[in-house]
Each structure stands twice: as structure tokens, then as C-alpha cells.
Image (cartoon, rainbow, N blue to C red; front, side, top):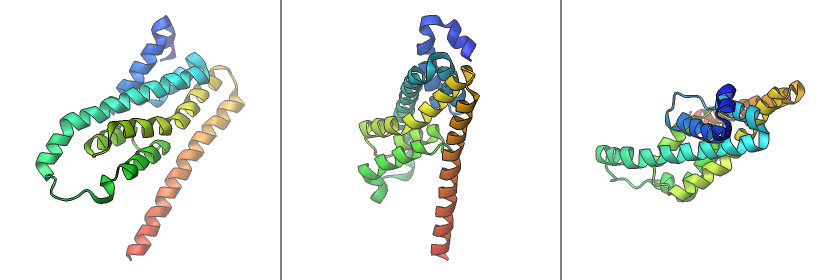
Length: 185
């Protein structure tokens, strides 16, 4: 992928943004290799900016697709008879989107599409997504940059930090599920 980006010349940054956006809208495409390649090709700072821009554009596109195509279908099928309760709160939905962006094991694409089906305002979704994707985007771009510069020690620590964030998130989810299960028992 880095060869493609390098071969694109001055259009390389646009290619990174387009590939990241496509990876978000077309769920099966993985975005992590694109972020790593962006970091390898452009360094961790500019690579992060490109990854964040592409992920944000892709997330907004997925949100708008779900809002325009999926939401009318869901409303027809399930109606709007019940009040949405806590999940109708703009603050709660914004916090959910933000928190989900910090958890690397949650599907970025799925969250974007699900948010489009919710009553969450677009500007709140965009802001929560932007704030939540910066840390992981930086880590991936930094890992790609460190790997290309031959800085094995730095790349190892970055990979461990990313893995640690994923492990802590998964552990938190498991502990929370166990607590919920005990409370119901």
C-alpha cells in the first residue's frame, strides 16, 4: 500500500483520505493497514492528520447513508410509537459515540451506521467521532512511521500501547457484563 501512496506523488495524501473513507463506508475493508501506510509514507504527524480526515469523512458518509436510506426503513418497520428514553438524549448518544471511538475492538463502521439510525444530530456525531478517533489514529500512524524509520523499540512500545488499550477495553467490557449478570441473578 505504501508503494501505491508513494507512486501517487502529490496525489498521495488524497489517496490516503479516499482509501480511509472507503474503508469506513465499505465495512469489510480494514482501515488499520491504511493508517500504518500513511504513517510510514508521511510520518506520524501528517499521517495522523490524513487518517483522521479520511476516517471522519468516511464516518460522516456512513452516518448520512444510514440516515437517508436506513432510518426511513426502520421507522416504517418499527414505527415511532415508543419514546426513545435515554437513547433519545443527545448528550447520551454523543457520549456513546465518543466512547465507542476510543474502544478499538468495536466496529467503527457499525457505530457510524447505527448512529445514523438514531436521532443524534450530525454535528454532534461529527464532533464525537473527531475527538474519539485522534488517539488511535495517532498510534497507528506513529507505529507505521516508527516501523519505516527502523525504530524497533519505539514501534514495539506503540504496538504494546495499542494492544494494551484494546485489552483494557475488552477487560472492562467483560467485567461490566459479569457485574450486570450478577445483578440480574
